[in-house]
Amino acid sequence: MLTPEQCWKAICARDAAQDGQFVFTVSSTGIYCRPSCPARRPKREHVNFYPDASTAEAAGYRPCKRCSPHGQSPAEQLDALVQAACELLSQEPLTLDQLASRIGFSASHLSRAFKARTGLTPHAWAKAKEREQTENIVMPANSGRSRKQALPEQIRYAIAECDLGQILMASSNKGICAVLFADSHQALEQELQQRFPSAHLEHDDQGLQDWLATLLEQICEPQRAAHLPLDIRGTAFQQQIWNKLREIPSGQTRTYAQLAAEVGSHPRAVARACASNPLGLIVPCHRVISSTGGLAGYRWGLARKQALLAQEKASVATQKVDL
Image (cartoon, rainbow, N blue to C red; front, side):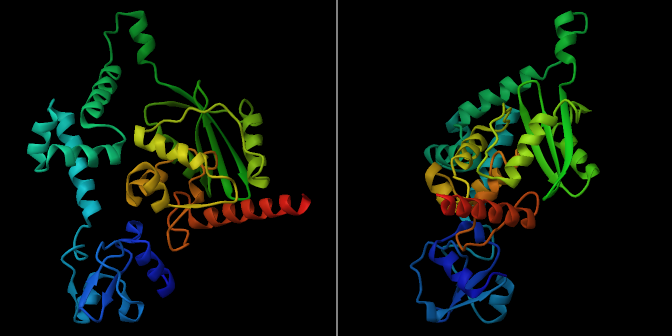
């Protein structure tokens, strides 16, 4: 669990990213809450912290009725409802009113929640899904054009050793589509295959050596950001978050809550978008931390996240001294 100081900081920020990490109790009321509870903030001297709901209840506290700390948070409930809406739209065409009726929400509330989590309205999401399914249909084999479309995508990749362990860079015919970290070649190749299950993967260290060298230079000298052609793939919401990440200067950080406020979403949705980032280093998801100042999660391990941030801060400090 976080330190008491970090827990209190999360409470003051109503940091939804810390929901599920701990609960806090209020001695003056006898209740316990989740960090993001919207109720009026209690006095610090009345607050204690517990790792979970069961330990708080064992100590004699009852759950807050506003934030329901013993079940799903309001944000998690909306996540589940939006996921259910996506599944319904994947099965059959529905108007917004029909979808809202099936989900049990008002149309306006569902539309806002849906767009905050996917970056699209339900109608636009359904249309995008329809286009995706149409593009994936395999045409009759007697057409030369169809046979060409049916060929698997070609993705080349190269692997090298760096200060962070092993790094893999992959490229489609449009540009770099993945930058991954791991401790072994096998782990890197497995993750690449998982991200591009239908692609034909070709190991090409020689053909990609110049681009890979540029990335390795950025690790050692963060101020030399790589400017390479990119093939960034993701949902509209993920793309929105990843663009925000690329705006964070080297040596600086943002919190999940800050990014969520900028895009009108919530910290958990931002955290999921960061975790889905396929372009480590280039899309600097390592520059996002929790409201407590802790590193929180990182797809490729907190040790790598800490090393990247430390290297960037040291580089910025060196630049200031040189000036």
